[in-house]
Image (cartoon, rainbow, N blue to C red):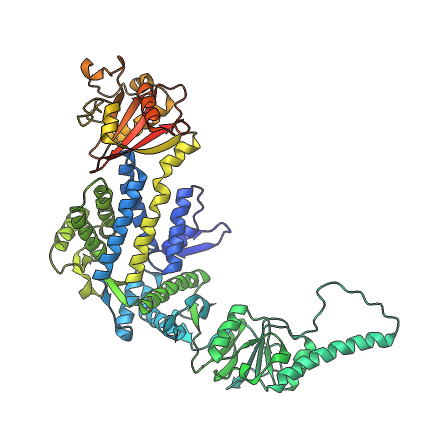
Length: 624
C-alpha cells in the first residue's frame, strides 16, 4: 500500500519503501535514530530488506528487554546473540540453493519476487527486464574480479510524460544537454569522441592582477594573446580529427566559432559522473590539457550521436556502443512523484539482480527461511548449558516475527497458521514451506517461485543483531548519567556465602504478590534502591506481600540486622539489598575496590548476582 508523505520543504513523497518512509521521519531520540540508520545501511548495502531489518531488530530488542529486567548482565545477552548470529549464518549457507545466473527466465522470477509488493508490480515484466538488462550491461570482470557498480554506471533519467511502457534501457549514455552552437551537427554516425575536464576559454590567473596600459597597441596585443591561446587549444583538438568534443567546463564563443568551422560538435558543462560514464561507454579517456591529447585518447566505441527534443528540453544521446559497460535507464510517467517511486523500486530490483550475480545463492521467501533458522536454533539451544541458553533461544523466538507479520497482514489466524508452520518445519525436507503473502495459507515457496538472495538475508540478520549492544547497555548509561556507578567483579560462591551466611539457594525472602510479577518488582526495586535506605524500600513496597524471615535466619554473625534482603529470584540471577557492614567486609577482602565503590551515607546497596554452571559468580554493584 502506497503512503503519501509531506517532507519538511512541502514536497509530496508517495512510497511504500521502508527506508524512504523512515528517511522523512524527524526524530530526536538516539535509539530511534539508530534504527533509522540501520535501515539506511541495509538499503545501501543490498538495496532490499529495509522493512524486514527494522521489524527484526525491534523484535530482537523486545525479547532482550525481558532479560535486562531480570538483571541479567548485558554482556551475557550480547554474547548469546552473537553466538546465535554465527549459527544463523552457517544455517543460512546450508539452506542456500545455487542458481544459474545465465538462466534468464530464473533471473526474471527472482527479480519479480522482489518487486511484487512495489508500486511497479503492474509493469513487473517490463521492470524486471529493464533491471536485468541494466545490470548485465554494467557487469565488468577483469583478472577474475567481478565488478557491478550500479550507482556509478547505471544512471536513471526521469522524463515526465508519455507512458510507463515507453521506459527502456539505452546501450549508451543520455545527458540533458544541447550543442553549444546552433549550426553544429546534431546527428553523427560513428563519431570520434574527445572528453575534456578543462575549459576551452582563456585561463585567468588565480589571484587578481592589475596591468597598467599606456598605449592602445598594448591593449590590442593583450586581446590578440587571448585569441591565440584559444586558437592553439582548438588546433590541438582539430589535430586528432574528432567529431564530438565534450567538456566539463565552459566553451568560449571564439572556441565555438573555430570548432564549428572545423565541423566539430561541442557540448559543455557536463557532470563529472556523466563524463566518466561516457568514457566507459565509448572507450575514450578524459584529458586535462589539450596539448597532451593523443590518438589513443579518442573514443570510437559509439555508433550514433544525436540530439533529440523531448517535451521542452533537449537531450544528447550517445548510443549503440560496442561494449558500453555503462548505461542510461529512461523512465517515463505521468508525474514526478510517480517517477520518483518507480526509480526507488527499480533501484531495489537492480540491487537484487546485482546481489544474485555477485553471490549466486538463493533462500526461500515468505518466512520459510526464518522458520527454518528458528527451528534449528531452538534445537541447538537444548544442548547448551548456563544462562546463555535463554537469550540464545530468544533469538529463535524473535525470528518468528517475519512469518507472524505476513500472517497478520493477510488477516488470517496468526496462532493457527503459525502453529501449523512450526509443526511443518519439524518434518524432514520442509525448509521451503512458508506463508502465502496474499491468502495466508501455507505453501511451498519452491513451487510458488518466491526466492530471496542469500546476501540480503545475511545482511538483514547481521544488522539486526549488531544493533543490540548499543541498546543493551542503556540502563547502565542511564545510571551513569544520573551519577550512579556500576561496578562488576567476579567472586567464588564459597566466598560470597561466607560473607552472607544464609541458605541463598532457598526461595526469595521478599515475595511479590500474585498480581505483580518478579520482573516488575525487579525494576521497581532498582529504582527505589537509588532513592534511599532499606526502610524506604519497605515503605515503597507496602503494596506487595511480605513473608517475614524467621529470627534465626535474620540474625547475622555480628548483630541483629540481616546481611541482605533478597528482592528478586531467577534460575540465573538474584538481586539483593546488601547491608553496609557486610559490604565493607567484602570490599576490604577484595582490595582495590575502595575507590570504585562508594556507598556514601546509605546503609543499603543494590547488588545483582549472576551465576552459571561454574564456581564463579558475577556481581554488579550499583552505587552513587
